Length: 402
Image 1 (cartoon, rainbow, N blue to C red):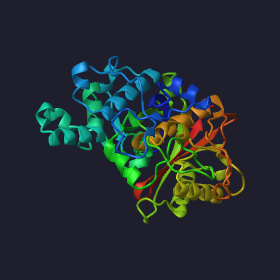
Image 2 (image 1 turned 120 degrees about the vertical axis):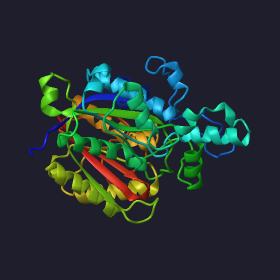
Image 3 (image 1 turned 30 degrees about the horizontal axis):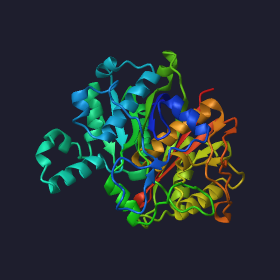
Image 4 (image 1 turned 135 degrees about the vertical axis):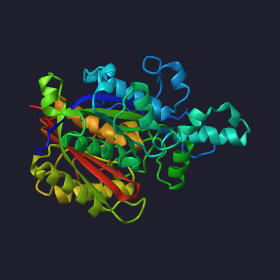
């Protein structure tokens, strides 16, 4: 059977620098930081207090009030981003139940904030005030299921719990479903809400910076947590073109690898293998990549390993590389999907977003990280890097629709 080309036709974003793709993009290329003091929970017992929090978030236009009270914040983010993406793709929600539609969502700690709330209530002996419905939302399939339930989508429905690369894994799986003719439309991406369990975990690892993220800078101190959701609508390219949809990009392919090494220390060879596989599966050579949206966490180990891998794969030239985590923090399960959206918008607008907070070059990160200011550039193909705990790596390539 002949494989089907896969188009990205809709983008939905909930992020620390804006809700909706246009606000997000404008703030991204303006180098606006979304890092602020955390108010989602009390950080007074920690020695870190900043992160990429989504402020002024409301569900009233998108989710019935009774439903919003019974689902976690990560599900709320995902539902809002999904409806924004569907509207952007000009796909009517009431048409979804009659089509072959898949919902594939990535997350690191599904509804971790609900775990926080219910655990705290249990110790305070207040757990009776939580309904069975919201307690059940802590289970891994809940986020994708909530999207399917609210929007009446009865097709394939799953969550990819591949940590910080989960969004890219979801995009790759949705790509395969479209390419092989198994579904007509795929809602893919990732979501994550702030939780104490994640915050405490990264602090215990001594991986968090004090108040800003400085990817690839010699004086980088670590990452900061973020939250949000990034959702992409995937369709068969020919069908999207036939209905005159706005096609942001064509997904060319993706590559997977596992470091098979330390759970928290990334390995250069694993990263290199994922990028090389993505290029091979996309049938493009390294000299055709015009932009790399880096994983770029701001930790010493990640940025060094990623930089060396990039230089080895792209040895013939310096490809522009930027880390938007410098502006929004590390959104964990949503990180790579928001970065995939960044790739699509960079392709469409011919602009590479910057890596902010860059002051001092690091010889061990010898890359063009587009420091501090966005750069106009003709971009035809972009590569999106996503790496996760356990060395689970996924890179996806996107081609501009000419």
